[in-house]
Amino acid sequence: MSRDEDLARIKHALLEGGDVLARFSPSAVGVRYKATNSPVTEADMAVDRMLRATLPSADEGWLSEESPDDRARLTCRRVWIVDPLDGTREFLEGIPHWTVAIGLAEHGDVVAGGVYNPSTHELFLGTRETGTTLNGEPVHVSAQASLTGATVLTNRWALRKRPAELERKGFAIRKVDALAYSLALIACGRADALWSRSPKAEWDTAAGVALIAGAGGIATDYQGRPLRFNAWPPRGPGLLATSTAIRADVRRFIARLPRPRS
Image (cartoon, rainbow, N blue to C red; front, side, top):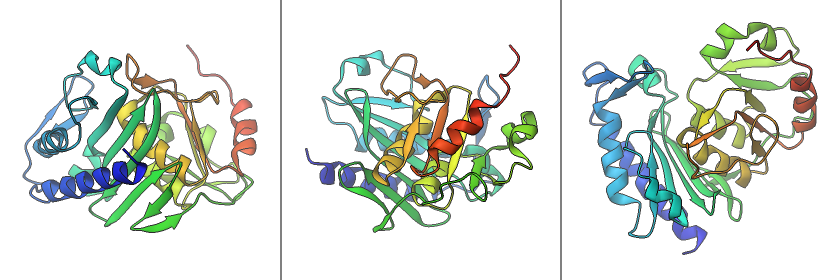
């Protein structure tokens, strides 16, 4: 199957996911909370069911935040890695950063991905072979080469726990809590970098990593090592996502940061 065919499948599923989400109102949707205190809504589950019925063929594996994990996926060459509603809190709070995120991994590498933000009508699609597009138009990571004057993305938890690491450092901070959308913003050049030491679930990163690779950027774990997908457990050791030009400056900056207390 060609990458164009993979992207066509992803695009169709993302738009279908947007249609499903349009049936739900944040003020009226049923919601429960996981043991981690993260919300999951009827909307999450409805999109999850639709994506699972739409995407994988018989020989393809499945990994979703909202589906029980079947380790049979570990033997599959191709695995769909999805977050039916990345940014559920933002969806409930009316913050327009929530998305449907779909990644496709082959032999542990993410090879194609898409992120769709229905509230802003932004559809991102990308592979390393075909490049990355936003609403059908090619996009690229920024040419910013220095952290001074750059835009760094972070989330509410990092701002609360590590303000000294981020504030008054010569770069602008933009808060975007939904990780898939953050990675899409780096891919299209609206932001320059993000970093996090904490483990990241594959469904939060797979789609955006594909977009960044297609747009000429680099996404690795926090130490700069390649990310691997379809692993057990399905989490990577932190994240470092940047445009190519700024990466060396970001690596120098985070190397000087104090190590967190154990």
